[in-house]
Length: 335
Image (cartoon, rainbow, N blue to C red; front, side, top):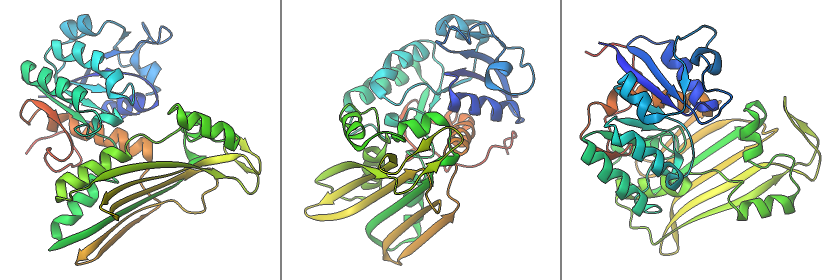
């Protein structure tokens, strides 16, 4: 029987999730909710750019929509902040519906956002359903993947992950999120207000530390601008020399003075190479590189969609990729 899916949040990631679900077997789209008045009342296929009508109208009332549509699971793609998402989860879990969310801070919230995580966990258990926070990063490339690779090691002393992206091929909101076209002074001010940053390195360091038994004393998350040395362009923006063309960010977990977990990310317009690489120092030493990297939007939408059937199989409560079954492509049939 097809899994009945409801969508909450129809931004770029939410719409990418809709497109994948609409194109796969094993799912039935039954509802969609968004706060944007310009989307409410329109056919979901038109809003998400599917290329055909889905015969599902976008609504704004979560509880009423769930009551009418009776979804088996909700794909939640709204905000990065777990605290901002808590009221949304209250509405969803009051209706006893499992959730897969792309909220970055939900990917591993037990250190940095323990109070909010505990509240969501308690609500999910009371509703007797599961909630999962996932994505490509955080959720896979810089945490679940190195954790999985460590399974073939007799010992691991150090974990290093690099994620380097040419941001010129990404969507405009992402290019703005990494500070493209800002002056260095403007960049620094927006970093202070957390308007410019990648969300998730602290969560990824925490997940790796707990999974591998690293006793980290502290975690740092340092953000720096990447400054253009020549004019660089994307479909949307032109960055002049001296302006910010992107971001360099490092999340590091320390044991004493030693950096035992180092997550390094660069996303900027004009990067000469895009790749993701995991290096484990131990027995044996491992180095795994994905040339061309993992496309952020495609991969995030994919892991959300592929997790929809899996969140129906696990015990109630708040889950992370560490507590879920091994991630895999969902073909639409269950063996």
